[in-house]
Image (tube, rainbow, N blue to C red):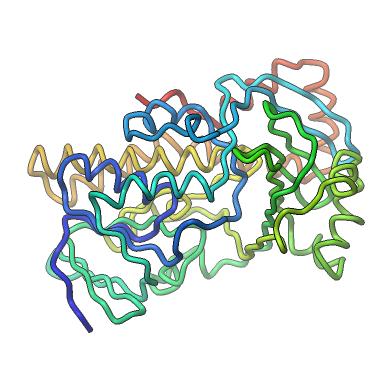
Length: 375
């Protein structure tokens, strides 16, 4: 095992949360190591709609998505399983940008000042207030603080025996890009039996289609194509989409064993960011913004508690748990309630009728799953 020199912070995972955390901390001349298992650029299973709440913070990080083609979005459409629709303005708005482009934009800003290692972390050991992070290529790195930004599910979750890993989950997600005529200023959420599908434009003009479904619903079919034709296309909006959209990927990306169970915000003294700390239901369209926001929370608290006040690990852990819960706990609960409602035929029908009669309900619900502009 080859041991490298020590760092101030090691970030495990190079998605939105990990990259933004590195960008933030490197502004203060800290020695940062980011470890990501896959090379950039890359596509990821993701809704690819980002709330505008993070734009001021991204600007502070020297990131301007709109200058790189991000599509402004200010309209929202939701449909029932049979294609009945309701439309609403988005209170804060957002933008559409592929993870392929956004992650690469962030990565290119990180590499001049921080070290990035493309490797798979196999274990993390904590002893005498120092983390030792070991990788598949037999390298070992050390730092007094470690951040977990490795997403929805990782081999590290199993290694740490995190509670949610041992709980049964019945969700899978599928994502692909398509050539399809779709309003560039709109994000749509179309429901079907056992799940829902989001549509929005990306910076290339391609439409991102990302859907979440229960394994029970999917297993009634023999393939993704059959599932899209027989189950999802019961919704007339999705029927039109899959009949007319031209796939741009060789095959869709998939991910299974998605867990929405409660997660530990700090695990074995590792600070969890983004999906590693808690996964909001994709129907809320706010997971990417929450990941970015969590990076801001940790970075600001680390600088305040450790660097500026010379505080200790306990004070930082307490402050981060408190801040994370204050900003995200209610959003996660609201997302869970909305998902349960939409997956219940009777409740979803009642909700559609209520929102149709009182349209102001929809923007109110959207606000409950989103934050305010980060400054």
